[in-house]
Figure: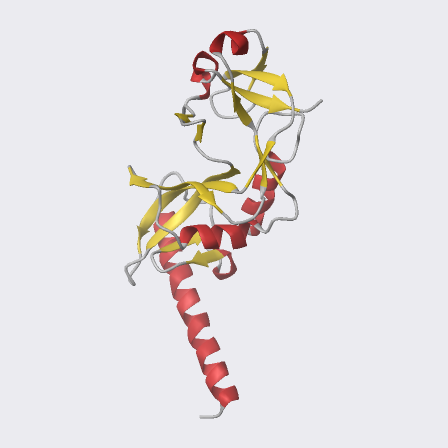
Length: 209
């Protein structure tokens, strides 16, 4: 077989495999009461590693960048020229930080490049208590504390996903929950999962005016 024929044959096999993966993942989605009708498993949106296949669409990437782009609002910021899918592919090639309760998490992974700025900071709880209140517009609309300042540049990325099911090839299919610059602790102290607990433990959001 000539080199060109071999290349074309390998390409055809990859296309067939991708189609099979997307069909398997779509079946998982269609059988999930929460995700049914909300996600479509297109071949071009699948990011693969040895152990995982992550559904991560361009729309999801744009949504994440939009949520992490306004310096005047609480939250970590992504550098807008970062290709989030490429970063995610590198991350899911590593061992996860946690796997439990249907979640697979990679926390504070060093990406080897500056990807954005950390939006959470730490101070004495009494100092934080005097800061400005801000009601988060999403989730449970928790009230947090904010203070003017500059975000600290970071190479770290946290990626949180949900398990969709186990594929026929043994890998786990995942859907994206969230992705943000930074980790889950500051100065050795864990950042609470519940944002309503931030202030009492001395955590607040940095914003720019």
